Length: 280
Image (cartoon, rainbow, N blue to C red):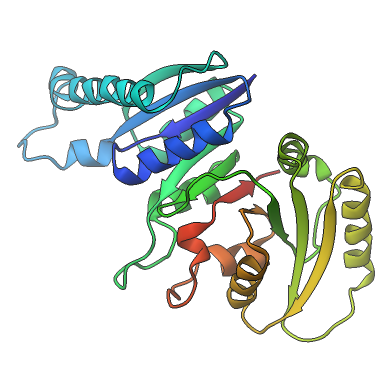
């Protein structure tokens, strides 16, 4: 049984992520935890001239959130046929956002966090929103990031950008193997270099490890040369109709260039293609 954490702020964005998650895991036995967090920072900056008491926090924040979570469960039941494999639980907390996510991941033994993210506007500092950005960099849990325009379709092509600087702990790749197993999709291992170069000995060893690890699944290796990693990813995603991009968070060289930069023009994968972020 999988345990899936669905943080929600009741926005269209987070509903899109919930829709994607329920479709993505429709054939899996799952406990879904719908979590709404009333940030302590928000509670502390209300118009109250004093620190709100627990009763005030319950009346102003907790009760309305519980009502909205009930409405969300109703919306799920109205939009999805009953699935005997799925159980739903609701949680509402007043806490610091990341601390609350971490606590729930640990207490509920969460396998995957599924979060929505909104594409950048010209004013946004980063293309990935701050909440989602914080979760995928600060919480050691597999996270499925669902952009605002991503709609579920059966996975056929999964991209795995890597510079082959993997550790020997290939267990981190288990969620990819599970997806390939469940969906019969193909894995496209993508290496992007800024100039034509030959893999060094360590990189070649990592490539061979990947070859062995994914031996039983449909997979292929692809090598692109481009000074801008994000441009190369965009080209690859478009040319192969990639349905999911999987990345290891520790692989900072690629990870930061692909997910955290201010360039908005012509980079549509941020708003269209889900990301699966893996942690060791």
